[in-house]
Length: 310
Ligand SMILES: [Zn+2]
Image (cartoon, rainbow, N blue to C red; front, top):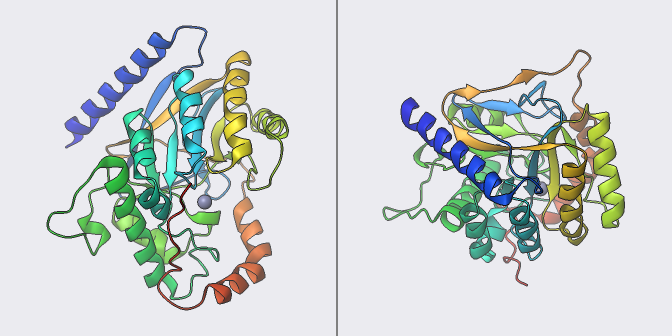
């Protein structure tokens, strides 16, 4: 198992290097593959957890949440043009609606990971129905993404329990980073890693692509010229910004690190002294609003909305 995992990681690494070489020195490329093990659970990303994936100076991990969406193909094209690989935390409901885009993400060498089925407005923490409802939404989302992105089939029926689901990438990100201890324990028991972020583009706020680019580059600089970055591939301003970002990263000497699922646990590096959870402060401030949105969503295991269409 370990050897198989290491071999896969090695092959993935060779693939990444080959892709970057084909792309030529004028392109950003993917400079390194990091094999991330989630055995026994993993919690990374300094905005929420006191540890993260170790990166060297000027190394960046690109992650995108909330797709697949109508704007995702433009981002995939920008990444392909620069031979850059990223991690997509897909929403199950969207993968149901646009399975071909989720599949394309995998076929183009990206890691496709999980971000619930319905992306509930009140977050999983304040979901009506509590942790049981949250688990159901997470599992349903994982099954949808496995089917759409990885073509996994379930001839004997869809698993009713996370332990019976073999994930291609056992990586999960909480909507709004609003975790619960029960869900953290559940993921750890099932060898699923929880991914926060080190810095974000704040692209849930509408802005111009130029404004977003300036903001991201400024934050990278403040963050010691490295980190795991969060963007959202469902926003047009981000789709427009990504090609500019990749050129800018290349010009400023940044290198892209791509995460793939691997054996074991980690690697991780502890947070610097004086660390605190920034997301916990934000969630605390938003709590009344999140709880209110739970009332609006109404009872039921999860708010079922039709899959988005173009
Ligand atoms: Zn999200």
